[in-house]
Image 1 (tube, rainbow, N blue to C red):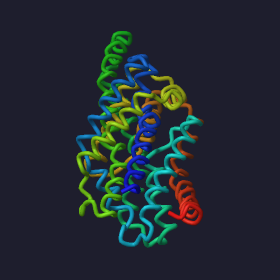
Image 2 (tube, one colour):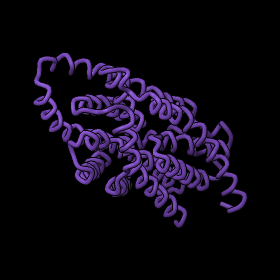
Image 3 (cartoon, rainbow, N blue to C red):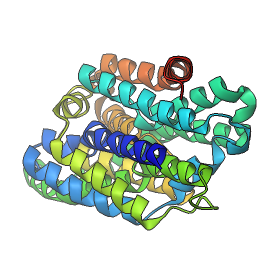
Length: 330
């Protein structure tokens, strides 16, 4: 029973950190254009993240049953604890450095690394793992394309509009699109730790299926909402100001683009990185507006984190597995 409590607490800690790490991306556009104050944006995002997290479980079930084969793992406790500790370390490190890294990438990589350290590559469900990694890698490219197309359409529709009046209208609309963004984040990102907790419950015989219990949904949603309420100014600064100079019309286009991509992924139970989806939507909008207006040096840092997070967290968690198993005897 103590082991389950430790895993649940670590999973909720991961969700709490995810709240101020990843959710900052959801409100970055609204804060940077002053559509919302930081305080109001954070409160709104906390509520919408909570609502999003309790209405969907498809992504959580994917994490619980399609990454690791529980029947092939010898030390399930160590695998789950190490996966959570590794992803927490990675999230705190990238948050401190202000890098919009992905909590999704970190958790998937950490889970895979710990499982491989335990039972070899055979512990990974290759088909499910490949599908998840594909969704994580393809979704930013899709977001970039949708962002480009979305802003192109908006430019065409509003080409004769008065710029001043249009910006006032789009700034008001941003409150709605930022709320949608935060809700979408909750429907996808909060699901990952739900999947880990459910894996633990199945491993220890507390339930027979990977269906997500309601109490797990509620606890993870609450932890993420609380984390969101703390805020994440470091990430907001990077996403909201260091990719391009955002105007309300740009922000609305980016918000709508990322919402479409995240909701599409959630519909099919696929985990995506809201960090990378939102950032790439902004890049797509920027490229459609004025390609030289995008700060591609920031984009390069994001791409680097995008490509390296999974392999680096696999290495980190594999190392931690041996430390925990050999020295801590768990």
